[in-house]
Image (cartoon, rainbow, N blue to C red; front, side, top):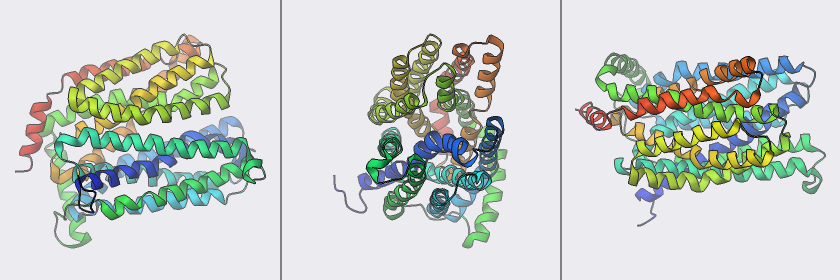
Length: 428
């Protein structure tokens, strides 16, 4: 098949490369360096409990802002035909925020949090419109493979840059740097450059459907408000889509809880921070081929059954964590998580894309991302309560089993055939 400017394969690959681009922020900044560097460099004069409070508050604020704004922004993008423009705007916000972190000196914790907040908004906001463009580049029968390709490239790209940045922090002399602090600051700048460079394919070669509202932004906003009200009003007509979102909320809450609590869990049972960073790298590089494999599995076996398989593996991971006492076992669990994390995310995005009206993709993916931002709210609370009540950190993840079980049962009951028919009729 040709790879010309207008070829389907080039559009899909260009779209997927945005995951390669912005996953650098998720891996290097969010999961890797910012939480630790904030405590040990910018907020070194704050008590540990205070720095934890402020960091948690910023994460919650960013999530709340996305939850409140995502559906409306998605509706505006649909009406004005502006998904790519919104994607570019939020991407620039994230890139500039990463660049700004490089210039901050030790002790500037307030400014670091403010800039990090804008970075989170740039990353989360761009994902709304990136997800919505999936239906613009891939035919309905190829959502699983295209979505999986995006997550696979995200794991590989984020992992490669994180490995390079981790080497900089461990061996700063080899890179001509003064110390590890300078290496971490430089890492934020490399994320900005990486994100900017690899965003060009989606900007240049991914098409977008024309606006469905009247001319201009004013008409787009007016149409968006009207459309958003209609969507909220007739959500019962897309009951299957709503049922999927409820199921998704439960099982993705379990997934995100493991993602966000894994490092804390490892530290709580006595593992070293360097070992945990190695585990994060393992997850990234295993996630690359595994996400591609899950994409093929979703096409041949069905997205729902493949998601249920991933949920089952997650449940085994939780049970295995309760008996873990060696770092090698933590690495094995990192392999298991890497095998299914990208797959469950990719297939969930593809399955949702098949259950929504084609002309309202950004709006519906606004709801999808809103549900995703609500995820990991209940799970960490349950983990904290379990740890406090049992007094054993190894048992703290057991409540997550309940989230996975409920999500799996609800997903099994979703009538996908009826949902796809309802989404198709909504276009008429």
